[in-house]
Image (cartoon, rainbow, N blue to C red):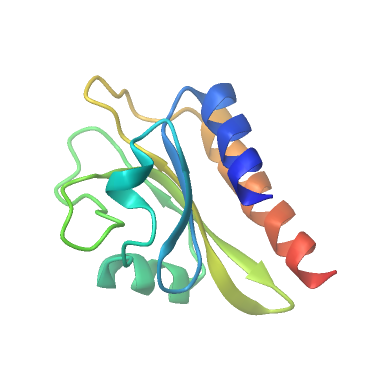
Length: 123
């Protein structure tokens, strides 16, 4: 299910999209799956998920979020998936080489995707 959802999100937003559980990347679209699937999430990504906050990249920001351990890939938007009050993973839109900061539309799309996946996990 997450594979199809990731593909739709990537096509709709124009961003590469990955979905992670609490430890690893479980789904990807718009990026080479061989490069990212089953890779561990970074400690910074774990911290973001535990904080239950969304991440939003802004041009000129000092720090960026690299969601995949030992990878230079950067996040554009990331939102935690919360199911039954517990952190279950995250939906992450990745930056591209010519990325502009995400618009409110992409931010909302990521938030809705995370909320939807959380509800799916509850049932």
